[in-house]
Length: 417
Picture 1 (cartoon, rainbow, N blue to C red):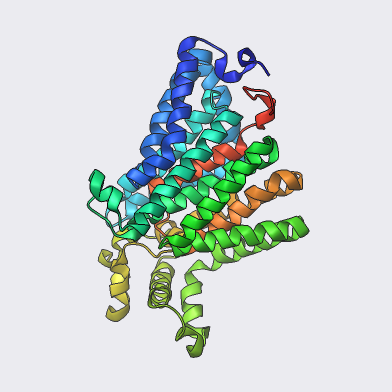
Picture 2 (picture 1 turned 90 degrees about the vertical axis):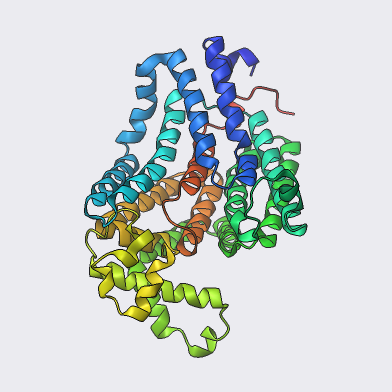
C-alpha cells in the first residue's frame, strides 16, 4: 500500500502530525514506565489528546461519535459503562467518599482515553509502529534488568527516584509483559520473517526480565499465558471453556476463597509456603469475611484502601481486623466484591464472559493469543495489586487497542519484506 493510501497520511497535515505524536507517545510508554512507574495514564492521556486533535480535524465531532458509538452500544460496552456508573454511585455510601471519587477518576480516565483513541479513527498501528513498540519494550526490559543486576546504579546516577527497592518496579515489569503479548501476536501473525525474529527476541527478553524481577504475579501470569497457549493449540474450545469456568468460579466465589484455603489447605503444605503467600491467604480470609458483612452493594468504591476505619468492618475480631489496614485485598475479584458488592462483581463477571464468548467466535489463529492473554492477566489480578490502579488500567487499555486494531497488512506503510 502506498504512503498516500495510509489512514495516517489522510486528512490535513495537522491531523497527520497529531496522529504521529499520539503514536509516538504510545510507543514511548514502556520507557516512561521504567523511568516513573505510575506514568502510563499520563502518556495514554496525552496520546488521547493528540488523537482527539487528529479526529476532530479529520471528521469533526460527528466523526468521533460514529467511531465510539458502536463500542458504547455493544453489550460489553454497556456492562463496563454500567459498572463505572455503579462504582460512582457507590462512593455515596463509602466512609471516605472523597478518596473513592479520586480513585474512580484514576480508574475511569484511562478508559476514556482509550475510547477517545478509538473514536478518533487515527490510531492505525502500522508494522513500523509495532516494530518501534517492540524495541521500546525490549529497551525498557533491558534497563530494568540492568537496574536489578547493579542495585539501581543507573537510577542512582540519573537521580530518577529515591525509591530503589526492586519491588517498586513490579509495575514496570508487568507493563513489559502485558504489552509484549499483543506486539508478539501482531508481528508473528502479520509481519515478515524479520518481524518474527523480532517477536522471538522480544519474548525472550521479557521472559528473562519477568523471572529476574520480584513480581511473583508477573511470573504466574507468564506461566499461565504459556500453558494456555499450548493448550489452545491442541484444543482451543477446551481452553476457552476452562478459562471461562475458572473466571466464573473465581469471580463468583471470591469472598470464600480465603476461608476455604484456610480451612482445607493441609498443614504440611502450608508449612512449605513462603511467608508472603501465607499472609496473603490470611488477607483474603479477612477481606472475604468483611465482604460478606455487606454482600449486595459493598462498602463503596475504593473503600478497601481504608477498610479498617469502616464502622461495619470494625465488627470483625481485633486480631483479624488488623489485616484490613493492608490497603487492598491483593485480589481484584475480592476487591470488586468488597468495594462494589455482588452488583459490581456480577457486571464485571458478565462482561468477562461475553468477551470470552466473542473470542470463541473468532478463528483459532486470531483468538489464540488474546485468549491466553486473558487467562494470564486474570491470573495476575487474582493475586496482585489493587484492582483500580490507573497504571494497570492504562496498560490493559493499550494492550486492548493493539489486539483490536485492524490487521497490519491491510494498511501497512511499506511493502512486506
